Image (cartoon, rainbow, N blue to C red; front, side):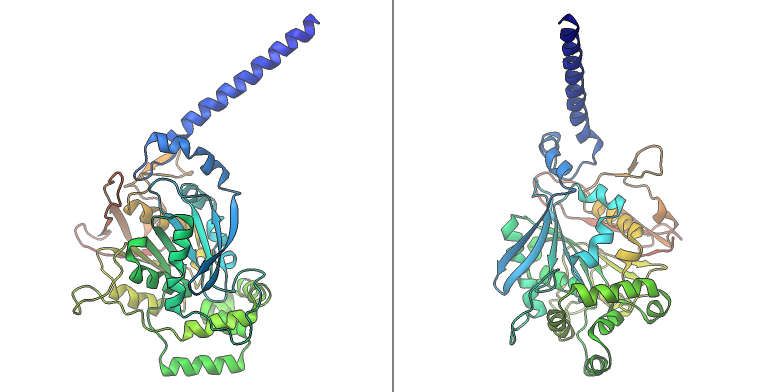
Length: 404
């Protein structure tokens, strides 16, 4: 009995030691995380459970909007003044095909654990979606944008940072133009601000008569060079577009995207009462992407003091899939410019946290983007993004070409 009692005391002591150490680790954890804008230690402590559970806590929702149901997948819940990261995919894809590689990238986890993430699927494009009935009128691009406030209201978001690709980038840009107070920042990949002219429209119609729908969509997603040389990736997406996305629903979305109007934005000061995106914007395109010309034109129409143009070398039509590391790092600096992440963690450096002014891989870019912002507790601070040319200080340049 004495031996048994001794063992029980030893076991109890070990358990108490483990509990004590676990408690100490929980107390230290908030100090190791990058502080976010408008947060103090109390808020970070209260959000520990959210951050730790976020990796597996994905929930699906069907949200009623003025233009029909919208399928949404969300991880986490709003905390403090942090915005939600809201994504919108390109035509031919859904949130899984478009964003899984990017959001599953290891370094991206250091960012997303601090934000609620909300993936929006365009109507009828999600996995397992039922086919729309005959005669169904697919929402216009403006109506797709007008569906998003219902998502924001449903989850109680104060505002969002949008990440959109292709058609999704157009929808998010339209959303920001109509509801500017709900959008904190935008990352727009492969955006084309122009509607199709008659020649483009006729070419699309002819292509639809001579090619299958998946092949037609592939020519939108990938350049001709990629279609020829990157056959493994293209074949993978051909199969998934054909098998995962409902083809009738996809055709409706494709037709509506090709019927879009010009985004109707102009650089401030160029025309009277010019419309523009009022939030910080990062435009992204691969140097071998079919959308390159459209993104360049969009850059010429936005306010250069709040816009960064990121042209990614050795990247094609889906940079978030083929170059997730480069895009993740650029996204970190974009968030820094809005004052959300004070320190970055770089596992390749023994020092751990990296001050916000330092650069790692992007330091080898042709033009390095430096950011500065001040935090304002309890309110939305105005972000201010500055750039310096690597060829000489004082030269303002908002084009950052990643060549690494």
